[in-house]
Image: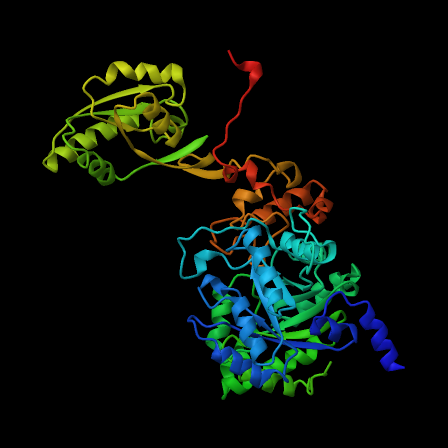
Amino acid sequence: MSEAVAIDKQAVLKTDSKLEKLYSLGHFVVTGELGPPQHSEGHELEHHASELKDIVDGFNLTDNQTAIVRLSSIAAGVHVLKGGGVPIIQMTCRDRNRIAMQSDLLGAYSLGIRDVLCLSGDHQSFGNHPTCKNVYDVDSVQLIAMVKKMRDEKKLLSDSPIKTNEPRFFIGAVENPFGDPFEFRAIRLEKKVNAGADFIQTQAIFDVEKFARFMEMVVARGIHERTKITAGILPVRSVKALQYMKKDVAGMEIPDSLIERMKKAEDPKKEGIQVSIELCNQLKKIPGVAGIHIMPVGWEAALPEIVKGAGFLPRPKV
Amino acid sequence: MIVAEIKPIEEIADSIKAIKDAKKVLVAGCGGCVTVCLSGGQKETDIMASALRMKMEVDGQPVQIETATYERQCDPEYVVRFKEHLKDVDVVVSMACGVGVQFMAENYPEIIFVPGQNTKFAGAAVEHGIWEERCMLCGECVLAKTGGVCPIIRCSKSLLNGPCGGSQNGVCEVSKDTPCAWQLIYDRLKGQGRLDMMTEVLPAKDWSKNRDGGPRKIVREDVRL
């Protein structure tokens, strides 16, 4: 019976993305994130993917995050594939116009990448080329619509037909529940879903109460029934990291109680893992949350500890 | 109006020095936008002429410097008036915006033109001495859809569908001195009871109406002579 249900569900899948399959079978999805290096060697990515492929269901590959030049997210995705992992490539609107983006989407799909996360991108003033020109030919909502159009209408943004082999991506988007105006955040999320976002990853959550209020608005609008919402976790190793994020990273809400807790911790790394595990346990209970996305920001060793500690192992095989 | 800012005198002097055998310089003021934004009108032109005279003298390359200011440098009827001041002039330092500099240079191709200003933006004086950008001349105005606040120029990412994740406490992630355009739009539409406008997905913009379509031109047959 369960097999029949599974087959029935598979019949309506839009893509051959593993993530879509997991979500459609009702699994609580757990994804991680790998930051591509600032050099041209991809073995480490392959190694991490190989080590962690049974710990998380997929790996985000960031696209020149904080506007610092890194190995491209698509190339990084190929390294992850080599390591046996599922790559979720990030694509920002900062550096490419619609021609380059569509070209890269065709290329990424041809290389075996099935999941793309569409986002605006950090402003170039934060990175190592602050004098550069940004693009923003399309914005993140328009990018989502463009990827959907390529898949569902088999057309480029210009309406030119993709006569064969259209890229069939499972489309992701992001939302920051802690950005302002707070009351607009659920509506903005809905815009992304209306544009075609199949799944959502949120900004790192430290303030569970505020996130729960955001999710109440999301659920009230029925958005969680039209997309899969993955709650973001960022493990911290030190109180300094928390203080930095609170002070210098726009759109982050960090409760003072957490800063105090990390200050008092004898072993801040251990405490950081414990905080992340507790967050996982709290977030998974919030109505509308369909998964957890963990951003270790270079601390890959934290991933298995959190996933195991939160009771998310073993990961389902599909 | 076009808002401009006077270039450092060293840069202007260096541009003049780079011109072989420059003996006579005209500093040309403009009575248009740059007079209103206090950077290139008659007063600033006279000050620039005095400063340049001293600078060139001190630097050991004295030149004869004169001034002339007319209503505009972007209009043929005023541009011709500069002609009487151009006798034996080797270099003109134009205190107009980039449009004026080019328009003058087009009309007097035998003379070398040097810009005296950096042309900054199309903006307005929010208070005396403070100018802010308001329009990027994109060629296809969206203000009817955005509560009269332009996200193309006032949002650091030119987003058309709401604020990015970096909007916090009403300011942009790029600078705490920059209001988030989408917060402004949200507040304006909320105040007008029109927040539902923010749910509309605005499609990718037609940038061919902007500079991306090449230099732009308008032909109005109804007013041509």
